Image 1 (cartoon, helix red, strand yellow):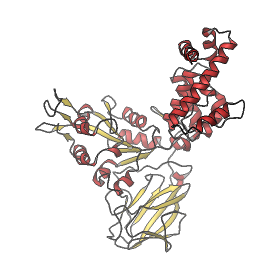
Image 2: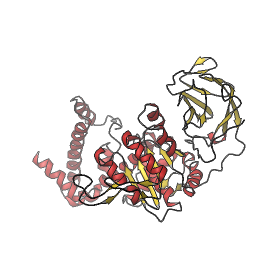
Image 3: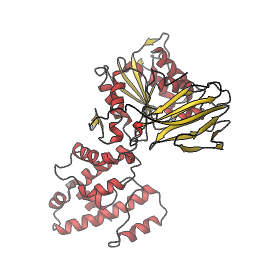
Image 4: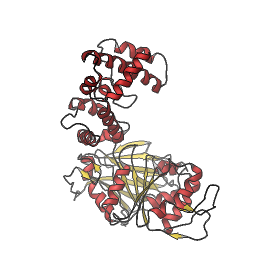
Length: 453
């Protein structure tokens, strides 16, 4: 018997180099599923789960195997195996393993099941389009371009989708791009952020309420499911949703109907649901914080957006895009900063880059020379010129909070910068502001603060 991923499940990988050409087969040699063959290739999820749960792509019937026993994923041409804190552990060629890279030829043992790992070559790799964007999602790197064909397929379908990725990777932009390319494009695109609404109001925000349902409910109001009727509903940061509401959300998705708080009947809704999360939902399920059945219902398709540090080729194009978007002068993009951009780890990803460019457009040289145009904690080292390094060291030694220390350094920089600037222009604030690229009102505000000091 040969068993591959269900036809109604779209499985997507976090793209890396030439992984789309790699292919591994896992053959069950011993156990209740003896003879079954599972394939992991360039179309596999970012982490293919092995276990007895319905949410596992490699589902085993061995009672000694945990519900989420282990995971495998392609990693630079090899197969990375991780044990997910299973009850009976995972061994590779007789050695207990927590995490290991497999190259083919190994024998795995999970519970009473033995699997043979074999390397193969994918015969028909997916063609990678030569485009630099999918709708509003920008990126011409190989890591991003590999996602675009599957994004287009998902846009044409109506299956639930989970978009995973670190904060700031563009999950909302991708969801909106999929909506815009879908048959639902003329319908509403509604975003609900689970972290932006107080816990006591989330149920009402999701499903709506009738007049008098609770104190303050002076009128009836539809929830986001009804607002997204005939369109798409993005549930952002779904990993933060309280578990007590997850069963109600599951029913709404399964039955396509909701009941308002204080209401008597059910309201039919037709909305495609896309969920986004910065959390590892596999681990959240394993820890008991996220319902297994809700995960299984949502993760019919999964896309893992790569962090910006894994798509460095996109940094310059994104920076120039944000420069134009925030009103930077044509031809004045600070190309000399690209080396610093490329060496920065971008923990806030594309959002951090956008904010950095916004500060540069707003403050000009002030932001750049203050070395504060990168996220806090990523300030480049002082080059030793002048006494700026000594001042920074003095501030650091005061053991202030990061925000307080940053404010001290910025205020001192602004003081020195404006004094020097006004000296150069004979005290003329209008000419000084024009030469520096900052607003005259802002410059005068700093000068007034200096005089008061």
